[in-house]
Image (cartoon, rainbow, N blue to C red; front, side, top):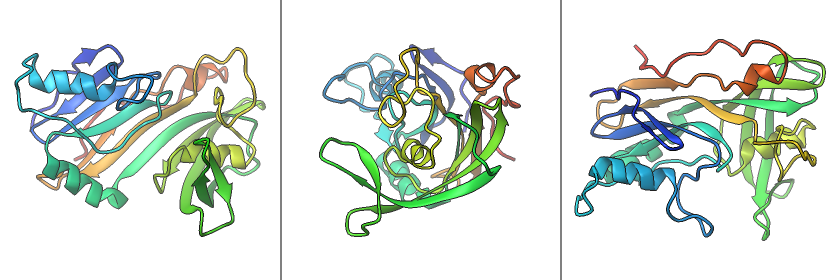
Length: 239
C-alpha cells in the first residue's frame, strides 16, 4: 500500500490512496455524489477523473462506500473496486467514526448517548418517532470538549449511520448544530454547518489491517469559543 502525498483538488484533499481505497478530506459545500441540483462538481466525479488520469476511456472506477451531507466537512472513504466496496459495507458495523460539532447551549451532562427511532417524511425531513413501524434505531454518543457558556464543542461517536442522524439527535436534546438551517434555529449570519467528520477507523478490505485517519480540527472548533481548538492530528495509519 502507498500513502498519498496529499493531492489537492477544489474541495477535495486526498489523504491516502492505494489499489483498494481512497480516503479524502472533503470541504463543506461539496456533494459526495450527484443530486438533482448538482451533477458535475461532486467528490465522486473528481475522484473518478483522478483515478482515470484524464483518460475518458479508462476502465478505472470509484465506488461510493458512505456519504457526508453537502455542508458537512471531513473524512470520507471511497472504494476502487466492487469487491472492496462490498467488504467495507458488509463490515460497516466495525467502523468507528468520530465527528466534531459546535452546538447551541451547554449540555448539563458532560457526556451521553442518544437512542431514538428516526424516520423521514415526504418533505425529506428526518424526525424522531416513537413508532417502531416507521422509524429505524439510531444511537449517537457525545462528549463535551469545551464550552463558553453559550456554545459547546462536542465530540460525537456515530454508533449507527442514519441520514442526518447527528443533526436530528442534537436538535432533539435541545442543542442543535450551529448553522443547521434545516433542524436548528434561524441564524442569518451563519456561514456554514459546524459539523466535521474528524476521524475514521476501518479494516482494510484487502489486508484486513486496522487503519485510522484523522484530519486537523477545523478552525471554527476553537475560534467560536474563544479558545484554542482541541489537539489535532494529521491523517495517519494506525500501528
